[in-house]
Image 1 (cartoon, rainbow, N blue to C red):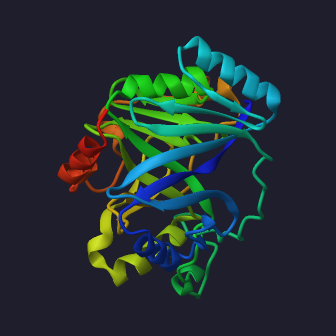
Image 2 (cartoon, helix red, strand yellow):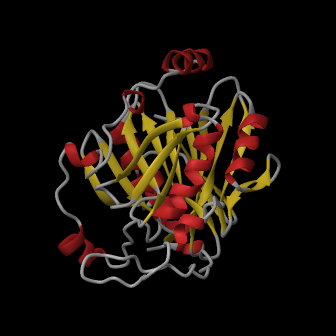
Length: 311
């Protein structure tokens, strides 16, 4: 795969300082000038100011100039108008007005895992006469930005641009409903859903394990109980545990762990990729999907904002 990782995304919100303060509470590193990242570094979220919240740009890493040549050619064959620079190719998705850039970048660095403790289970008790270490845990920063989900008024057009033009691979999809695309070995780096207007539906930060998710999400929840949005649960697509919170700008922020990894396309198609039903697009267990995940609470504001921009 010539694409090898998500480099980050740029969003715009009405109050960047407030969102930046929230990221500081989450434990992210960075600031409004440099962007925000997890404890492992890697992909960066950059925040600009705008009258209403929106996703501005997505950055993807590739191996070399030959990859850029191939991407540029595919985009031109599709009738797009990519901009080529020495180390990047950029194209605007007409449906969402999101700028998608692929640039030559170093592979993601491999960081050391934490020492995970084997839990007690029926028939295999490994901890005797002591409490589980996790009960003494504390919130800590997530490791890295994992993925984002973009709402598009023309779901198929955005999907085809990313797959047939940019070169993302499809991990799972229910046509016309949701598409999970990858530009790395993660099950998905970019998710697509239908929406009336373009929207950053949610974005996700990876944690070490379920206790990491729980400690960090709980700290944010206890500071502001209204920020809780959905969870705890386990998704079917990607298999990951999740807990969603609402960031101050109105997007959903997901903390997750235990995501599927795909290193062999053939093996995934033969053994990993199983049929998805509408039920499975939500979760395999956990609370019901909140209505505002489909109809955002600020939809009227978003519609007015996009209308003010014109065509």
